[in-house]
Length: 133
Length: 138
Length: 100
Image 1: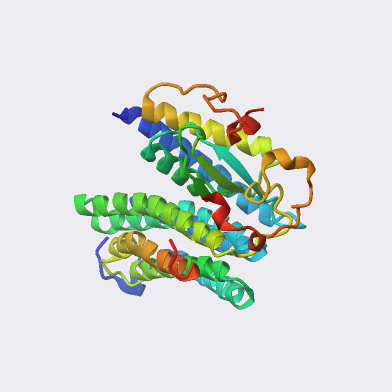
Image 2: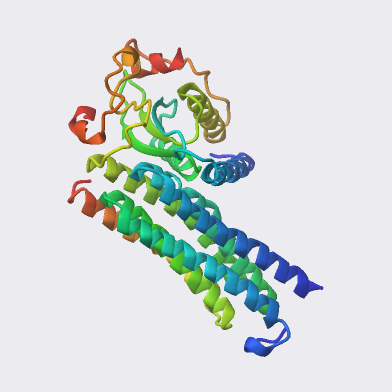
């Protein structure tokens, strides 16, 4: 069962992320030139259960600046994958680092322990390999 | 004294929330495709509307005093604003993708149109969602 | 502190100004959104701008309820936040012509 203290801590962290993301969106308005720097990145998940994946997708979407566009179901060989539209990242690796940080916090909340490092068990040739390098 | 605090809080939360809605609308005006617009909509529902809700709750607290029913309404409204709008954005962005709406051509990298390994191919920079077949995902 | 003091009560001067500013800002948001609907080309932009107009209208209704001292201040935002998803989901289904 989820530890209520960890749940509150995670909600507070999401609140902080919402505020800082909103500041990004607002400050982007006053910069001249094109608005934002959109990109769509591929995020192989370490989440396994449906509840974890749903929570992860909702957390990504409610943070201003990131949006889940499509989901791909996982099976034994490939992890479930989210395609995330990011608007204010500097580079692809930068965006992926922030998303992995969020996922680590989420999994620490739901499982009660920190998840494995980024090198999750992945079969050869799965999309996870490219993102981990 | 309580009046001044209540007025200041209502003004602070209400005006900040309304200003966030306006700024979100301006950001929507400036962004270039439907996905970016859905993206910059989350400050409005994730922060602007909850602030307006807090202003309304402070106002009722000031006018009518504390009530369990009102606290319940405010809490449920707060949570459902955040969760429901997130789910709605997910549904809408997925349907935009499935319907093949155009994506701004400078969306780069676009991992739905090109895999990460094909970085050298370099010919998908200007691809739009219309070129991409949804059945490839299945 | 009493209810029903209306526009002439002691508290109402500053509060009326503040609430009017909020209503004006939300009205500006609706106007910008409607201009964007006029110039948008794809259906998805219109759907999301429709969502923005919906939430701005809910905010205006809340502030009007505070301005004229109705007791439905929280009810409005409570119901609208729970049912606001329906319009978005309907527009999403229209966009994909019934596919999920």
